[in-house]
Image (cartoon, rainbow, N blue to C red; front, side):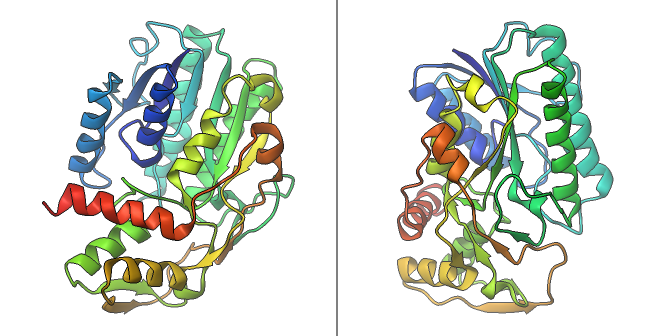
Length: 314
């Protein structure tokens, strides 16, 4: 199969590219290498992919994509997005990179790749709102620019599916962590601050937040399972995470134990838009995809610590 992965130099997408390549697929990526976080990390990921024979187009999804679609694809996995909850990111940036970019990609698919087997949209548990503890039938109630625009992107995709123009599904991910995690995310930042004995900014109340922390390897296994099941998942919204829940404090303690160090805390006021609790309901993923997360939090964090020490401390 020939597969296109958007956001390919990013955290989850780079792992997905490697997974698909290991299964014998012909994998292409697209990424704009924007500076939301250090581009050096994306370049590092891209270098790893290039060594495995994966081609990456360096361009923005809002540009003309005719060259990207010079050859037809069997599947498109759409992971590119303006991520996170940040006061420094404007609504317009979320709209441009989550809504307009998705629409431009969809228009390119319809124009150049009408026989696509399936368009797999990667969404987020943030669409559920403050509490993401429900199944896919519950209404979305996002509270952040990120959640609102990711929900809009999801509906652009599913709108085309409902009108028979595209086979598509949307997969909502839960608190993914592991090697290559973005530097502003919890565990990469935690590992860095522990290693260098730097104060860690901890938002008030966040240690009690509960999360379905899901290892990236389990996530990409679930995404790759869509291949060959395009009829079964067509039109579906599917939660992908783990039903094992941990508090942020438990996660911090696990990393402290692995690194044999104690965190220096820099208390901060509560952050608006943060989810209080996520607990992935994954019955549908189990049924449709044969999905079963297997990596414990301690196992996954050990792999992430090992990755960080190998890539950034030598």
